[in-house]
Every structure is written in C-alpha cells, then in structure tokens.
Image 1: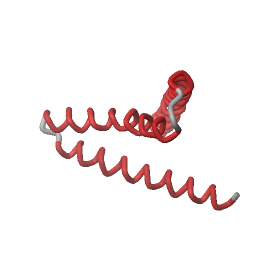
Image 2: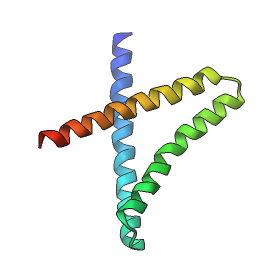
Image 3: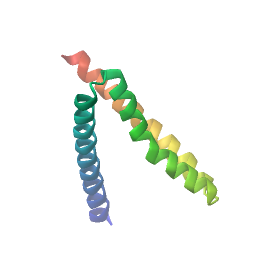
Length: 94
C-alpha cells in the first residue's frame, strides 16, 4: 500500500511537471507570435489551469457527487495557498 502511494505521488508530480512545461512553452510561443502583454498571458494561463477544475466540478455535480465537488474546491484552494505562501517566502529570502 505504501509503495502504491509513493508511486501515485511520483506519477502525479511528473504529470504536473510535464503539463506545466507544455503550458509554459505554448504560452510563451503564443505571446511572442501575437505580441501579447505579460498580464494577458497570465490571464490565459489562469483560465487554462482553471478549466480542468471547472469541468471536474460540473461533471461530478451533474452526477450527484457534490461531495467530490466540494473536496475538489477545498483541496485546490489549500494547495494554491501553500504554493503562494511558498513563493512569497522564496522571494523574501532573496
């Protein structure tokens, strides 16, 4: 069981890293090709990262799994808060 959890964490991390690389590379090319401002690129990135959560919440709610929707929202916000605090701490250290 413990090995399965470790595998899950490693695979999840790899998926996040690969998709982050693809998203950042694609957005950078799009911004250069269309001469977009940094704020516009940030807005696009925000929407692109929120769409999967929106689809998950919508699908689970339509199927009657409101608990899954609530858990998705709460866990997403907790993870975002941890990331923001970590980024702030890293910036304060430099």
